[in-house]
Length: 314
Image 1 (spheres, rainbow, N blue to C red):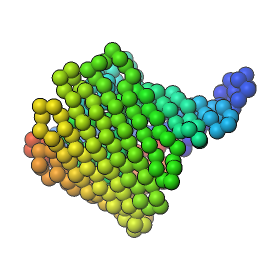
Image 2: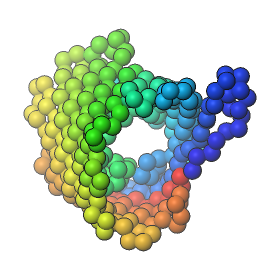
Image 3: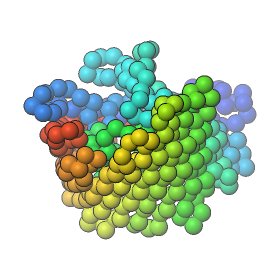
């Protein structure tokens, strides 16, 4: 639920235009058992606070922006976390301050031209595979576990463009802008299509995590809503210099039963181990839910992970 801040009214009056600031987010924690070791975790997506801005500039043009902050309620502090410097989830830089920015940007949106964002956002590959994951790439996602290291999750210092939807198609482009990170570049392309109950997203990306490594990634994610159930499929392929080509395919299903939603998915990971995941979520309301999740993880040997958590969106 979005809450508009009245404080921006004075600024809007001075600027002569109407501006909105919204605060949204999620509070979440879970009890985790992984390989027999118990701990308190961030849950399916962790806790974050998002500050969004939007100003109508007229003629279908808007100024938009967002700052998302990760929070650690279990330690009573703001999370430090880590983020991808160029999009490669396996090469991260730990934040040294008390705040971790997450999916933050500023940009312009036009109903005729499309949307341009500059900042740190999810990669085209990550979003494509999320379309084929019944959990939406939650923290307990079996599909994410099967992907292993290699796929880009977020791309920092990036220019992001999404075209207007034309006959169900949307074109996406993503490019790192920091020329000082010559060996850490990312270029991604995406094409999405929606028609009624059917959705499909594809992506292709090239990144250079090191001066001697080039990684090429392709991904496809799709889902189809049958009404009584929703079917999912996601596949990724990674070709890296001096490394054998790796691929992963995951199949999933989501079944709503009143206030309960059941998900299950299974696939084969990069090391040819079978990965299986399942979850059950109970919605107390539109904003508060509790869940149990299971997956057998992705390592050199399968590791069973179970979570019981509670989540509140605001």
